[in-house]
Length: 179
Ligand code: CTP
Ligand code: MG
Image (tube, rainbow, N blue to C red; front, side, top):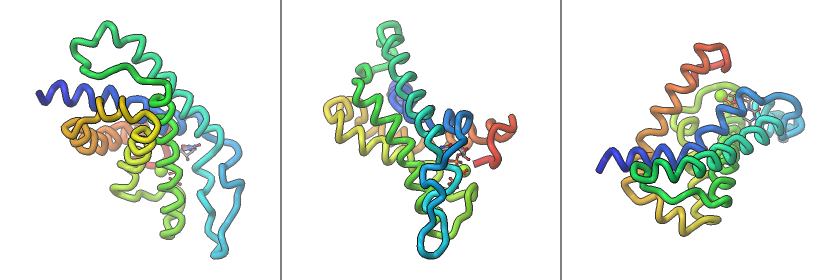
């Protein structure tokens, strides 16, 4: 059923969806690259990737997974997925932050200034890394949860959710750019 597939896709990805949004709200302070530049003078990552944003983002993603686990007994008829193992909670949340950081690295290497859009990469960077990391550290849960239909739903729905939440954050003045 499409409905069950979509529910599992969104539920299982929530711990990966939250971190980037929390990083926007909590970010600031010391950049991860410490201001370092490469030989050609470009920043390694840029001022948009900070320790504080990454730490708060990861913590928020893990907190969401734990909260969903509390909720699980009440919704297990609808959400056909097993609770998040702690390792999966961590890898989904931290993987999302690492994916976003890798994307910044790619952006800087391809001459894109901080804040410029990188269509495709902006929407899926965090999905790829959070799923890869989770497949490695929580393989059994990953294979049970992310069946092929669920993976397809994630790849289709994530860009839509990403674009709409960022547009909302921009409209509320929380984000400098609408992507
Ligand atoms: N942020 C942060 N730490 C992170 C990710 C994001 O502090 N690991 C905060 C920063 O304040 C950043 C804002 O969230 O400016 C928006 O995030 P994002 O759009 O990912 O960064 P950009 O500023 O657009 O920088 P980049 O071009 O490198 O993606
Ligand atoms: Mg940006």
